[in-house]
Image 1 (cartoon, rainbow, N blue to C red):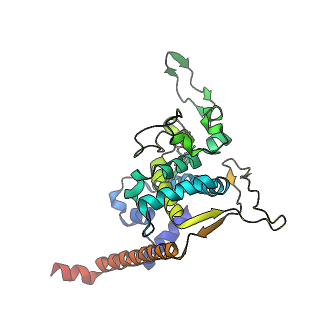
Image 2: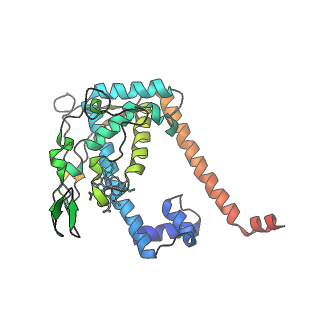
Image 3: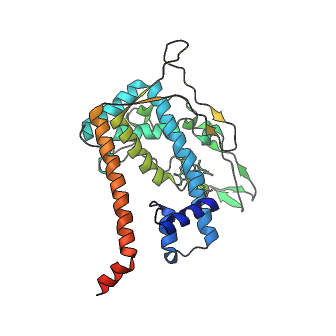
Length: 289
Ligand code: HEM
């Protein structure tokens, strides 16, 4: 964390640091009532907690799209009908994209670490729950292994079809990731679920708008490769890479994505320039005069 902090601080000094939450903090230090150590822990936990799990979810998306082409078609058809072919999906489209949200919910559910690993919790004081006494130190094993998280069949319909007990209305809001068990339970539950919900939904909508996911051809058999999800056996299991062909849906879509990327670059350069200008002495002198 210290090296990242130094990198950002020196980037700010040289005027080349990109916009980030940490840059905002460093530049407006006096607005925050935290110690340096608390700030370091907060940013470290955002990186530690926020980097691997969303990557796992996006890897699961690639896997599910390759394994279940019928869901890929449904996802793409929804985005194409709601958004059209002339622009990328935006946050305003999200209430109209229940299939996108169902796929996101299923990709977060499918082989989540809570089910694969289990995260037990221990009471740090005596407690009474529904009339039952539990002494300080009692360990509660994670219940994920008994729940819906253990279903190894990917099935986004469970969030969309009124025939399933997991179905909720209205479809402008549900399926969503609120109070969802892959994020854990109780006071230690993941604090990043709101952030990651918005991030994953917009990413999946945009990927569905621009790309097809295809299995690579195995050179030995000349057939589509067999893909497996495997993990590096660490305390917080990391998914091992697998092959996936992510192919543009055509020139027009590629142009739209390129245009959006250029706008983003232009926007960051513009923000940087504006910040440099507003911080320069000339600017303040001229304004005061
Ligand atoms: C698909 C994405 C994610 C999943 C499935 C996920 C899942 C989890 C789980 C299962 C826990 C442990 C909960 C427990 O102990 O019961 C956790 C903790 C945590 N997560 Fe996430 N997470 C995700 C994304 C994020 C993001 C984006 C951030 C931050 C920006 C984040 C930050 C954290 C932090 C700081 C903790 C520790 C909380 C504590 O111990 O009090 N997570 N997450």
